[in-house]
Image (tube, rainbow, N blue to C red; front, side):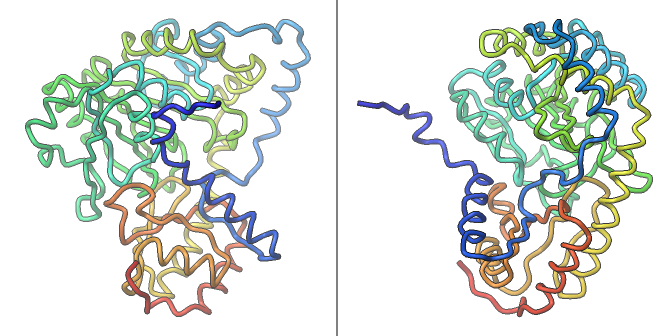
Length: 393
């Protein structure tokens, strides 16, 4: 008789896999579905990265196991990138670790720094993986509500003394998924001081740090004074270099936490395929012109959709980064009912804000991950709908 652990039984289905199942059902019925739900880049990875991958894949020596912490070439490239982009010095031997995508790293990190029963402070709204990572580690999630009025920055004073005392870990995520909020370095400095005073560690998820618009440059948490005492930062090549399926990322920062995660991972995996790591190293050492070109495309899409949303009565803050627009729902719809309306009546998939936590009610997340031609079709469909009515539920 098969058995399933309570941990898995109590784990909710991953939201975005549910969306894909619903999308397939509609497509099987002949519906032309436009998917603005998942933040997976639709642009191809750059040719020079493909070429590097193929070159490295032809070398027999690259088909052996990687070092558990990732190959030195990749770790040195990460350190080089941080020095060039953020002025941060990193020891590639002790302060850098290769990951099989940052999602994997976030899950394993929670298990490497908290014990069952410990609490972790999570942004609300926030990336659902933080909650599942804490759940799988046997921890308790404490939601820190973020709101538009305060620019979706963390309000640490809203945490009770008991919540501060019990928390061992806090996740941050800037530029933010789902809200597209961006911050300046002073927010990270405040977070470092708060964590130090309350004996907790911080993990900043910087997956969208290179996806920014105009003159905005996203700071690294490691730029803040004394950050390495309490913080690590997760990075990914998925969004900035369109390498989502390559599953390559990294974590940098506090050497004790890096070592703990490396120890855990050495008992679980043997890092990523060496040619992928070496192609990623090549990308990080590039002039980043392809990243800037991608950002120009995303900005053009953002401007087009932002203007159209305003025209049909959907209010949003114009983002300075990420692949998303975080939009307020018109009328008296709930997040779920409005998302269902767009899917049922227009064949458009968006993500209801409540998928990211209770504070996401009243919002939807729209991904900028289809071509301008498809966005034109989205806009045409939106203009045909009555968006001001609705019913709660």
